[in-house]
Image (cartoon, rainbow, N blue to C red; front, side):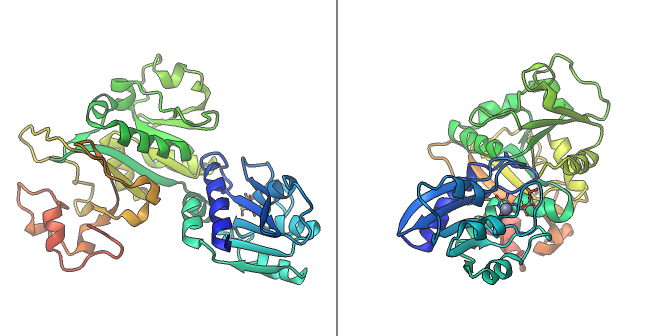
Length: 373
Ligand code: AOF
Ligand code: ZN
């Protein structure tokens, strides 16, 4: 077993906490001695033990002289709980290995100095990219106070947005539903527009996670919403918030410590978020059907007119990518991008060509860094 093998174990542990730790990061740790794992742990919720402390407490034998693998740079300043560097020093470990630096300015870049001063060997950067994926929402929130916003919308091959759950249900496959369900597992709140609540009355909960910390946010300009809707009457009704304005909703969720917000429709809400520059990640569920009602449709048209969706699979955890077989839908990860950055001239567009269609993107001279087609 190598350092990377143990670190991957710690990363896997940390993923189990994703969606449950706000405003703290999901973190995992493994304690190894004599080539054996003697303890492992993860940060389960804010206010609870940090991963290192949980792993040290779980040790089956003495951690003196052990190596500790942790997905994030250990904290060195006490917060709600004591500093992990102090706990590691007190436990008598010999070496501490972490994957990526803590983006929190309070702790960032301090652990190596603190631990080395206490005679503990350190190493970092092991599986750094994989571990950084874990904390993308935390990193944004802790540095800006704003949540990381993922928009997920379903569309047909002819770019017809299927922005209500009723129609999305018949176009998306079992597998794509499972994959997007996995997305609900790791977010802090799910946001929808009022129309979605009126038309589809979704629960917006997740069947494969503990839902006691998953919130729902409904954006309704009028505030007129059906009082009998599931989000206002089910067991989780105390975790439903109503906002009048999309941008204000995102800001307020950030203030309340929400790190990752998933917008699941409708198109109007997605447009408002895009117009306010608040979309960090865009996932299209592409259903292998043509709805075709005579219009070339709206899937690629966004506020400002020069904003389009580009596919960029590097922007989302690789676990979320993947195409279905046998005619089922696939997920197309992407982001919003200025058309100009792709070298697309607006005047090139004809009436019958939606901006950002594959055809046009392929003709462009300059591609945005990191985009894949
Ligand atoms: C770690 N291991 O498991 C976590 C860390 O308020 P506190 O005391 O919980 O501290 C929160 C900060 O500690 C958080 O912003 C981040 O910098 C770090 N979180 N650090 O070494 C952990 N959860
Ligand atoms: Zn800590």
